[in-house]
Length: 494
Image 1: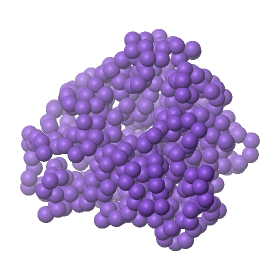
Image 2: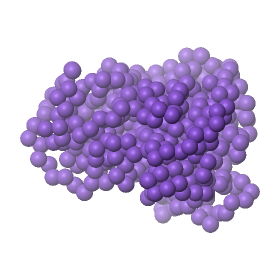
Image 3: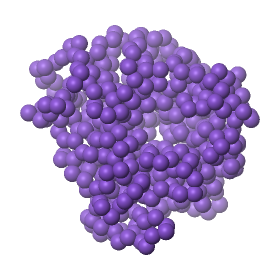
Image 4: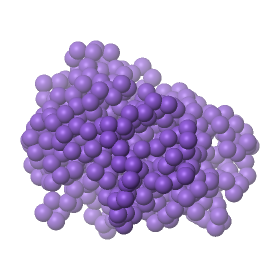
């Protein structure tokens, strides 16, 4: 194991602040990757077990990120290593673990879509992070379904109104299985393909945003298997559903779908400006939008249209129509956004650029006035970027697939420092306890001081590639690699 410690606080005695859950990706509705946790470990050793509270086996791929709520840790993966022998073959899986011990409580197992592998890419599993509120779990599955689950699983019985878990977990050409104690309890489910007319692509990825009685989420609609055609040009990119029933209530109607270059990757965020909530969303056409939220009293009926307040084009010289002629053009083409828009200090921070698989070799991070949708600053990044920013005080951290972590001035965009990561970063940096935590596709874990002067605290290899953002909750850090979930807690493993 390779480790670097440029400074190590071996006699760590900082007071532990009030601990808190991490119930959604981005910690809160503004999506800022910043946690108030204190007393976190600044090093760990997988070989000796130092500061390792527990490890849990996942599948062979985990592109989701862990969330923690109500004593449970949830993360998406695949079924390459079945926890229940009745579930065989490639599946999407959402696993729910005990926060203290890592024991598996239950799992949602979802058969793959079979009509086209580009609808539901092989072995990609459930890639969306879950969102938890109380005893309800909201997730978008690998089949492009919005689902509400019982956090307690089947422990308190099969709650309704949905009662067809056995049919749902079984491939269509096989007899329905009987649900067991390890299976998830689905409360309701909404098929976005049939009910919203979307066309899923690769692996559905969103993080559901809760505002009052409503759920906001990106639809995951994208290109077909040719990568040069939008088969459902009227499909919505941003949707709103009733969180009690899953009924779809509203959508954007900004004509986004025909100009999506690849797919709809970015989850929505929310800010409160002058006492008024606002929904911010980056479409697959590379445009940032601000919408009024739906009225709390909106009832199910005819699909409502979200009211746009403004839109902002971060790449105004890029093509906006007939974008698919630029497929595989690494010099020219449209921009897209994979990470989420982060709201901090009445500003929106977001990173985007050319598509990592099919687009131009160009990316950037920008800061926009959240009230007016006007640019404040723009800073170039490497070839491509998948991450969401983390903004703390006057510092902004962002990582890219050019293997660089940058610390910027959040007010001006000026770079304080950068560091070569030796591997692509698909994960977002997390700021907690005065440190920046980041993982890479090479399988490294990095910890830096969250400061304008670069201080590398710790580096180690996780044993497997990592796409997931580190999560901090209740004094514990959660690292997800492709194959395992690791709970890191100061003083554990002694």
